[in-house]
Amino acid sequence: MKVRLGWLLGSVTARVTGPGQGEFLNRCAALGADLWTMERLEGDELLVRAPGRAAPLLRQAAAESGCSLSQARLRGLPFFLRGFRRRYALGAGLLLALGLLGVGSHVVLDIDVTGNEALSDRAILSQLRLCGVGVGTYTPKVDVRRVENEMLRTMDALAFCALTFHGTRAEVTVREAAPVPHLAEDDTPADVVAAADGILTHVEAWSGDAQFRAGDGVRKGEVLISGTVTLDPPPLVEADLGTMTVRAEGRVLARTWRTLEARAPLTAAGKRYTGEKVTRYSLELLGRRVNFYENSGIPYAKYDTITDTKSWAPWGSRGLPLCWRRETHRAYETIPLPLDRGETEAMMKDRLAGALDSLLEEGAVLRSDFRAETAGDTLTVTLLAQCSEQIGRTREWGRPGDAAGPRLPEPDTKEQSEATDANDRTDSEH
Image (cartoon, rainbow, N blue to C red; front, side, top):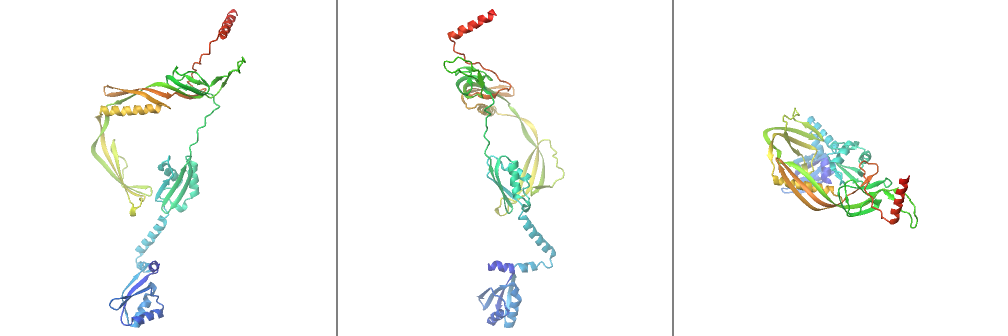
């Protein structure tokens, strides 16, 4: 504490020599000179340390006691500032530095984002900048509550947002909202139709009338489970109760055959650098860029840009918003380059397999085979696959492409045959 107080108020350290050192101490006490420390040195010397304002009193006590002061050193803030009395430029620079230090401690230099999983840091920082907070923002003028509410209002994916300032660092803590569950419109009539050709292996109708059995072959677009349900009368009652409409739902598995094809040339455009290049320099400070070149156009039709950025990170910090950027634009021309047939074929097979997996829904590939052909400069790879998949897709009524599939045949009884013949004879008589 005394060390800090001595630097703030100033201190004087001196060596006292002479036979009247005892009288010197008495005169210091009489004059009111407060001595902080006293130390006896070799050679009959006394080292004393006192507040800076006691320097004239020490000289007076030494003169009255017949002692001498040597190697007197004045330290502390008052003596440091006294050196600027006639150096106005240095004094103005000191005041300016103190002002910049006071203002700069409230300027955002770095922003941390925590708590996000699906949302990227860039998306959150971009919206935060639109709300008025970014690198270079003066924090005392920021309405934190307004920024938090604006972030929640403009980003539906956020359920919580908190903005905190720690000096020159801003921290944004977010919590992502839970996804809204999809609610099916159960009151809208719909059919379950086939998404692909195949042979049915399992039909499970949750609601609606199944139009096919396991083992039947179906084509794409046919109705597998109809939304029109025939109402059956109670036992021992002969009546036609009509039909009712429902939203058909179910699970229909089928064995399907998929054929996917991809084509790719065996030559590609490559780069050959011409040796011409342009280098440009720029400085970015607090999000603002200063270019050290005049013409912003690139004199080449085709070029690559190589950017080298160096930021200042003193004392092991994460870095200040001060970047020196060097951009090199290298010109090139395109030339045809042959591709390796084996590598191209392997790449196309991987992509076809991935495309097949994305087509299947609750399915698996039972067997697959690839066929590769070369015609001129083009490589064609065909994937033939036998799959087991869920081909039922819900289609609401009224949409284009609806198709009615055949109903299951009713049991053929003798009574129904006689009734049908009688109706036919009656129609012919009329």
